Length: 123
Image 1 (cartoon, rainbow, N blue to C red):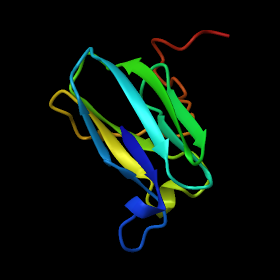
Image 2 (cartoon, one colour):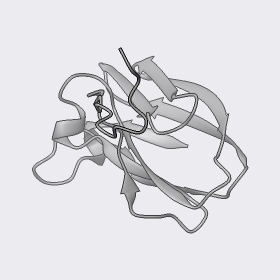
Image 3 (cartoon, rainbow, N blue to C red):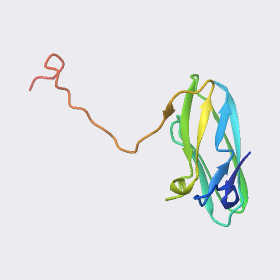
């Protein structure tokens, strides 16, 4: 169970998850139960999973969902997707297997121009 709310925040934070880090095995089906102890909405999102995993609950309340972990040792960022909640403490990690350096997903799509003349198409 992952708990979400003000009471789990450390000094200087407003909201937090407890626990902040989730350790799971590779190729495992994982059920996450999110218990929101606050009177506001909280989300738990893991954008590095494919498909993306997200739960949300208007509190106080509880919701659950499941996903299958990747077949690799990886560490993924998890957070509350409500604007600014991650910036005030609602962040953590999903550590799969032995983990890895933290992988984050950026919302910016970067396009690369092919400058290699052997692969560029002729006009």
